[in-house]
Length: 401
Image 1: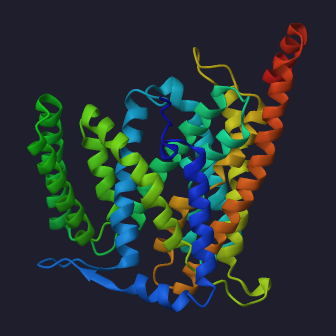
Image 2 (image 1 turned 45 degrees about the horizontal axis):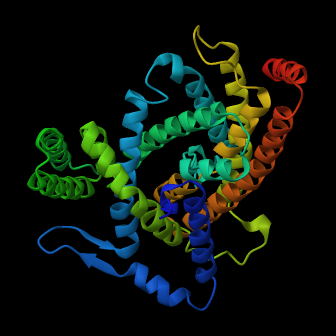
């Protein structure tokens, strides 16, 4: 009997699903269905006996997305301890490239939208959507060497770390430190329980972990720190074996439900009925900073990193491969959408235009990267079919590029 792999554990299908969900949200927001869906998303659900009273839209961005960040944190921990970033030798090159992929988009954004009303949006174009970027690479990059994927994965993970820091530091307001300290205590209890689960595997311990995890999330959400940080805290402290099983169990739900629902809700914005010249500078800054700022920053800093690689490091990536990775890095999407919501939370008009900027900028980066990756993959496939002497000469030429 043939067993079909779950497409929600792959890279291509979840990326397509995200794009469809965002497109559907944008479409329905601009049809007569807008008022009914907007009323549903604005409806509040409160937890009896607590101060938690959130709209459905906020339950999605603060609650469901915390589960996504739990999975992200588990992946981060694995890569930092046993994966592509587990040593300075492995991390230095993608770290330098990721630095350029953050600094240059910030500079581009501030040059275009550095005014007092829009300057707070500078973190928005710094993110890279790992799922989307790897999905595009899988769809169009057949034939590319695995080193390109490893480099992209490493710099996207570092981007995620930076995005998490931005969320935790920049968007915490009126922090209730007692509640946050209690949340840290909850994370410590979760750490202990996860190690007990690793040793004994008793189902009651798993239930206790779930309860402690929910309580920790509620404490973080009530403390003034963004609720998704709870997912990060819990994912980082979980023991490796339970963490791996949790990630495996949650991956289809995250890819098939949580991220598409968030994409739909985040993209549910009305397109302004104004001339392009009347759009906010924030919109244009994000549209330019994601595809252009990312590709320039990652390419320039990545090329420099390849020139100074430490002894024992992998061979340098050819310049054209770094360009391909830079183009893929411009697909901000999930984290950029969250940052847009947070940066302009007090101004719904600016927030909606920033979200549109993320959608347009990410789409441009997606199209640009699809073209560049396809051309590069075709070159490698052609090279693979060339005589051995020609392949050696081409490899040397690419290495020197």
